[in-house]
Image (cartoon, rainbow, N blue to C red; front, side, top):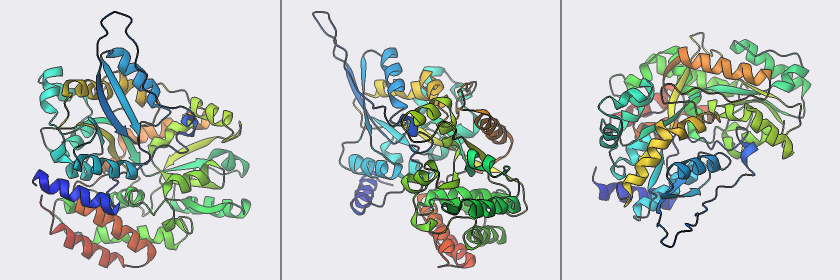
Length: 462
């Protein structure tokens, strides 16, 4: 694809406000309300010598790290690199970020550091991203790939073996965040099956009549739909969705069609909350959960960051929750009689603007965040889990339920990851978003949705 064509396409998408949001997680909600009071600043230190050294300024736009997490990272980076001034702009949710990024790159005014998502988004922006393999090899030597988890590097390579992005951290879905205080109040246990989940929903509906019934899901945003569906399809027909993605299998395969049906049944049978198709995860569903109006929230592992002691204490201080409020997390139970699983992704990947005038400085930041002190600091917030080998998470959790949740999710991720969250190709990812929403609303049968996906697949240039 020619760069001029990519620029025109991005500019067009910006004008209509329809930029693909990828995994789409604005991880600012229940997972990080504790950090809302912190603001990211860029204070230039004054050199007291008679000949002050001018710093190299590099720009960084983002949706994550959150506003509360970024100050520590920024301070650590600038301490390690006193000759660099990192200018941070927190854009907001991921959709707003990618819209701003599209406009900036199309106008030749994008940031030096590009926060990215692997798969469809990275391929969408590929022509604007500097190949990072040469930098990595120069920095770490010929075996530089051994720094990273295999799954993380595999996904970073979706945009080519020259590595237009490097991994910044891992997340997995689908999981359900739950109000542990509410569970304890009504004698409920973490459900292990769909029947048990339905019973939890029934009890909460009866005992908490003023609350929203069912599992909250921000189904208005396609990425939340995809996250659950990818777990379903890998339970029913392991690996087939990835074969279909590559054109090696038809999207009309019976296993994929069955997965679309199971997805639609979650809405039809009241597993997901009524009105979910009109709700976004942020702020709608997240706010309802945080305020105690919802007992179950379909989301991802990044919300482990809201289970830490520092997050809990800050939310208590800010009056968001009470001292005795505790939350937990568990993987989605099997929904179709198959093997319980989760899908994982490099939730944020680091890229370098190919037009940056300060590439050496940008590389230092990418190195810091992907395989340096920044990786250790950020993953310890649990916003993401390590994509670098050998990094130990030592976050203090808010209580026993939170500790058990981290243990359960971590062990599950080590043995039950069935594949990637993201699809590689923008056309298919967007098509899947549309198909899932249409099936959930009853506007398409699973069979018709699968036929439409197959038609899109035949147009994809692989």
